[in-house]
Picture (cartoon, rainbow, N blue to C red):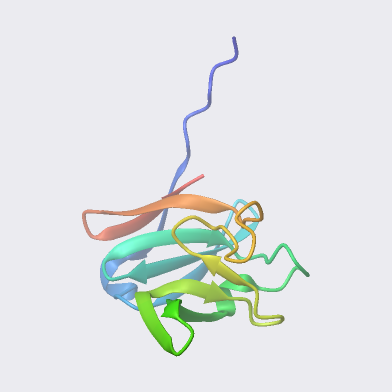
Length: 122
């Protein structure tokens, strides 16, 4: 049985450089990765839309739009939905899954705060 390699740790910012509501695109091991701070939680996604290779992490963040009935529209999970800047495909930044088809997803990475640093693991 093969041993799993330990994930590599990469410091991508100091916490004060990535306040809530902000993002940073970093290059780690040749991959562009978008790192987002959503209300003090950190998320990291590959900066690549699976539709047409757009720089996904440059897209607009918005809430999840919900509707209990046709004339009523609600909003939940502020700034957790990422819209591709080219063709408006939408992805959940917590899971990387596309809203219209959860079988389609963008790669995510573990991201968190460790002391005063924002780190990701590949």
